[in-house]
Image (cartoon, rainbow, N blue to C red; front, side, top):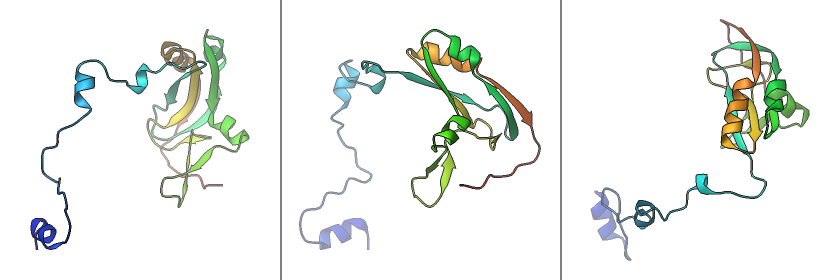
Length: 150
């Protein structure tokens, strides 16, 4: 039985939109420059975040020096996985809730581009520039082991 046949056999009006063109209501405001994007929002006290990512697929983190990043004008905080461990926020449940995942790498990185630190600043540019100044001392590894969740 096809979808159309099934829909015709069911009582009551039923709208099938799969595979059909739909007029989008939001397009005119964005095409004319009248739309609001999240990036356009400015709120009092708002900060921007930039993430420091690992260039290695597997490496031990021997240390993270955030001194230079914190010395930059406009930088409010640099957070590492160790900071999150101290606040009991290092592991968060996944969407399905059956397991947990690291927010920022703690002790080792498990995949390339893994998040290692987060920089918070008053401007997007200051956050990006400060993220480049976070000095992570990596010891690249050829072996991989996944840490157990707490």
